[in-house]
Length: 158
Image (tube, rainbow, N blue to C red; front, side):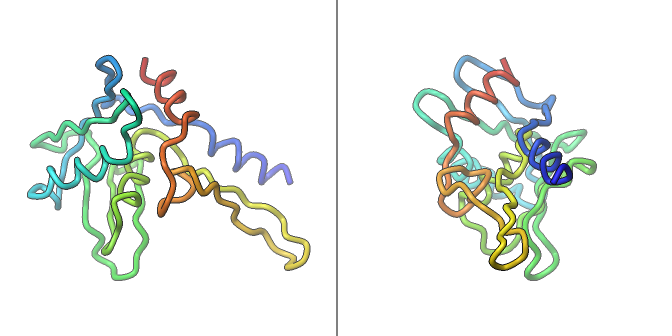
């Protein structure tokens, strides 16, 4: 049980990204488009359509060199899930993603962990994933950025 509590605790911690800055209600995220350099406008629209709420928003500032920025790559393996590698600063997008799934991966770049839980299901004698339908970091199909996530961004990137 303690193992699962420690895993859940890490889900609520945020990794601060030194390439995020604040300008009033806007957070500016520096990224390198990598494999998607000819699609920055479309990617920006996908990201901002989810990471905007009222006067708050995340704006992507595309850079022409990777340096130590997160870079976006296309998956080379059919059927591979999208993921973010913090060590190599890579965002790997799989084929057929919707805009919310892309925004979910950007949530990881902003520092968020996945926000789903494992709960013991006695009837099946196994752990089951539990999702918050309204949370982009829990449900990348239909979730949105929650007020708690906006609050975390405000505290992390003042």
